[in-house]
Image 1 (tube, rainbow, N blue to C red):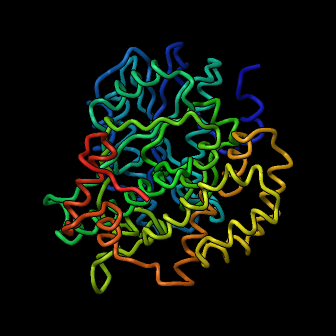
Image 2 (image 1 turned 180 degrees about the vertical axis):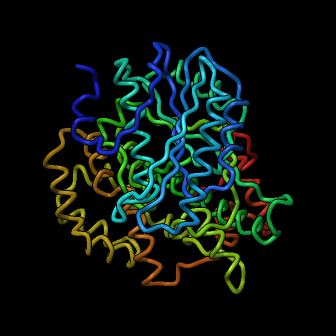
Length: 423
């Protein structure tokens, strides 16, 4: 039986058909959910203009909207679907197939980007299952994100070099200058991306293993791993964060700094958080600033994580005494999460230090990290302007502005940097 038949029978509820038979060299499928997207064709054109690889590629776009949507949105989706379908028919080749689908009136309870992404990713799994290719790769993209010309060649090279990699993460850079948007929108995009890079890089410096970016338009996952993880969720927002946390637990994650996607810097009200919502909030704020977590909170986490090798050999009362030396706000958070019971249970169910540490981070995962950070902000003075936070993290003698700081953190992610902050 092919690798994903059982998964599809259980999880694939909304189905679409690709009439063209999958080719034996089908290796990559790009999925693009589209809801109230004004310029999908620019994204598709960037894919078409990317350099080809010695493998077959398919690209799926799903125009969708929930039941009860306005007549204007319905008409717009129908028109975009028709135009995109015509474009796909005209621009498809024997090795690069474009397909557009329309999913009208999705159930209000689940309709949203999570469900749309799931429909397409399940379809991609079905295509790979038809040729029994568990190593096929599903690339998640957004309809307002442009890809570089090395989108496929860079991934294909890394995939060939590291066939055991479970998930690839692409680099990204929002537009922070230009004429498409007002200056304050570009300034807001700078601040939000600065926050994203700061959070990822300072979390990495604590020793936390699952520090990667969780951006829905910038990852690629192997079909077999997608199936093992239970597939995409139906969340209306944040679906990428929840999904990728499951994927990261499989390890073998690889960041591709040389493949730089270009997400849109536009204002958007389609989801309650994410880039569009953050930019909207910053632009509409009184001071046009963006607050983030104080570096000191990450210093606390680093000190706590450094104790793990000791915890493995300590008795519960010794662990408790050791944790009493941590900052009070972290101690209170650990107590509210019954940390002594959980650490002792993890010890009892692991036979080595590496397995203890791995299981510890399955308990103290990315969700718990955020819960601690939010707990600390609510119970202390740990809210800080993002520029101040990054200057503190980088240890700058002279404070840099947002654009200078963003360039510095982008350089870090590209692997081309003169300095790097640390906890």
